[in-house]
Image 1 (tube, rainbow, N blue to C red):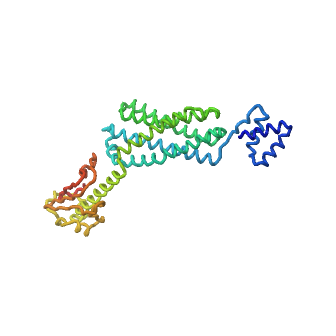
Image 2 (cartoon, helix red, strand yellow):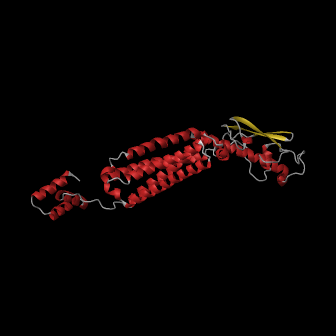
Image 3 (cartoon, rainbow, N blue to C red):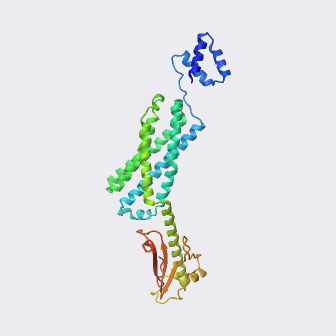
Length: 360
């Protein structure tokens, strides 16, 4: 609303011009009906026109849905990351199987990717919504905004209730640990912060919305917590080049496993899966002379005999009833499961006894 509009209406009223004529003149000049009605009301009434019960539409629904979706994604991914970090920092012997299989970093990388996309979008969309709600306070009472906000409150409240129930269950069961308590606190923090914020702002009067400190507290906290959790994950999993090197090492191990299985298949056939009546002391066939022979006579799988990164052939040495497979690895593998295939960085050989038909 501009001063010129108010000045014109005041001047027209001083000339005893009726309001209908004033309205027609302003419409013919290009003013919007809404602006004219609001200005006329402010000039002639002692009370402002009340805000309508619903100021939302399809556009508002789109922005609110997308904002809350990115919020859910960010919160869930951040909680998963915090759980993974706690598993590594505070290993629990009671859940060792879970801990070992989570050490491949795949869940951390997925969660980092979710945070990388969702969190900036959430902040960007929230800024747009905040600016629009500040400029058009009538949208604060939008049914769309209230429904989606209370849906978010319902989800976060259920999460918090479940969190407390889980805490009391383990407390009564006598199985509390430091790691578990920290996980409960992580869920409480990441669910409680959005719950507090949206529960606060959804009840604010339009005149108090823009002045509330809840916006700064919530978004300031999120902009500290989430980036810190994200950077911690980057430190753990390493750079993209580190991840690529890890993938090359996984491919090398996969190739060596396949070669080993094919050597046994070519020597024993299907009989290798049958438990022998007595220990095997003599090989049914001579070991293949080289990797080319293994690849040429592959039974079940196609053999790759070259390093996927350098193209250098893998090494294969035969000595009596034993043989070795060697490769150049980029990183150290030191997992607590499948430990036969652990290796240092650099050149490493795996030794096999062909009389042992059990898979490694």
